[in-house]
Image (cartoon, rainbow, N blue to C red; front, side, top):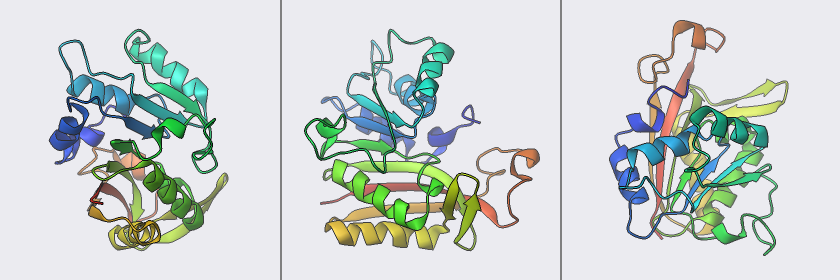
Amino acid sequence: MFLLPGLAGFPEFPSILDLVRRPREAIVLDLACGLGQDLRLLAAHAAYPDGAPTARWWAVDLEPRLWELGYELFRDRDRMAAHFVAGDFRTLDITAESSPLAPLRGSVDLIIANQFIHLFDLADQREVIRRIIALSHPGTTVVGFQQGRRQPREDVRPWGTMFFHNRDSFIALWESGQSETATEWTMQVREVDLQRDWGLQEEDVAWMPADQGGLEFVFVRMN
């Protein structure tokens, strides 16, 4: 599935690349990075003469073996210099000076949250957004995509409760984080068709409920 366009299909993708290409090397954070395919996408498209600078890029995932598999798959251990942090973003300490994420507080320029926020219940989603905002600064872009539903609701899975949003409920969720943190964000959220817009096949969505869909979002911090 990660061979589908993903972020590259966003109309905002050129501006995302402009952010990554800034003369001052951008700090990028990929949440639930998996194999690191989204960082590789950025590195390929934002190519400098010697490739996109990745030494100021960061990745977080529960499972470090996925990151190692990414090196094996892309064969770029000598070029992908992003810092990998193993852990649960909901509970990783971002305040202590000893925290691996301490250098990122108020500093991240681009945060990627693909197929991530929908993994949790509403309470944990609010915590994730608070943490994302804590790592941001005026000008930060938060971008991602995830499953959605026409009617927002909880779904109990073997690993826990997930809350799926429609456009309005997801904007309301982010607005609550904005209000709580006294920040201001522009919010672009689109409801998309998983087959028409993301290129999934019938067999990919057959297990999903009839009102399944997807959300694409781009949030930019204004102050």
